[in-house]
Length: 314
Image (cartoon, rainbow, N blue to C red; front, side, top):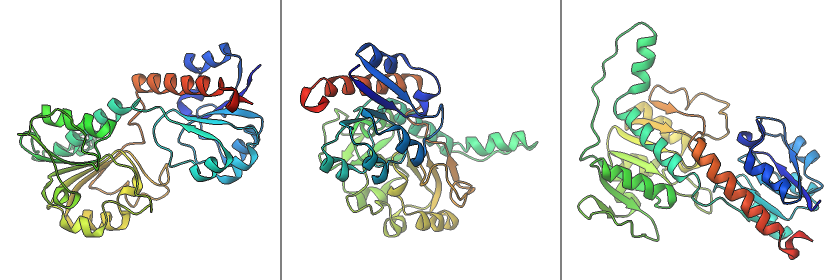
C-alpha cells in the first residue's frame, strides 16, 4: 500500500465513485468521512493523521486539523475554491494544494443563467403563488438588449459572457487580465468595476475575494447601482456586504438578489436567504453529473500525479 487518502466531499462520500475508487488501483487506501455529510472538525482530526493525501470538498479546514495531519503531503480540491483552507499554514508545512481547474465552469455558468431567468420572470414567486392557490402574474423582462455586467472573466465568467451574448445581451465586464473572449465588440466590452455597477441592469459576480477579504460590492457600490438591478452571485458570499445588501433590497435599489452561496452554509439566519427579493439555491452550481465527473477525475489525477513524485510521497 502506498498510503492513505482521505475523501470528504459530500457528493463523493454518499456512494463510492469510480474515479475515487480508481485510487485503490494505484495502490492507495481510501478513507471516507461520514457518508453524505459535511465532516466536523472532530471527525477530520480523527481521520486525517495517517493520510498522505486528501481529496477535499468545501468543508472548513482549521489549523487544528492541519496540526493533526502529520503525514499529509497533498490536498486536492474537487473544485477551484480554496477559501475553506488555511493556505498560508499549508504552504509553511509544505503541503501542496491542487485544484480541479475549470471542471465546474459550465455547471456554475448555467446555474447563473438559470438564476437570471428566474429573476427576470419571477419564476419562484409564480410557482409558490400557484401552489398556494393564487394566480400571480408579475410583468417580466427579456434579456435581449439588457446591459449585463460581469465582474471576473475566469473560467465561469467567460462562459457566462458567451451565453449572455448569445442571448442578445450587451455585456460589459471587468477582469484585471482582460482575456480575449472572441466576442463581437458590438455586444462585449471591458470596463472598470464602478462603471459596470453604474450601468448594469443585471450584475453577475465571478471573481475571487480581495486579499483583504473586503466585499467587492459594498455599500458605496450598491448606492451606485441602477434601481431594480438584478444581482447574481454564484461565486462567494463575502463578495457582497450583507448588511448593505439587505438595506438595498428593502429600499428597492436591488430588485432581486439571486445567490447560490452563503456564509455560513447552510445559513444560520434567514434574514437574507428568506428575504422576499432573494432567490436562493443551496450551493449547487457545480453539483451536476457532468461537473462532478470532471472535477473528480481531475482531483484524482492530481493526487496520483503528485503522490507519484518521490519527493512528495516520502
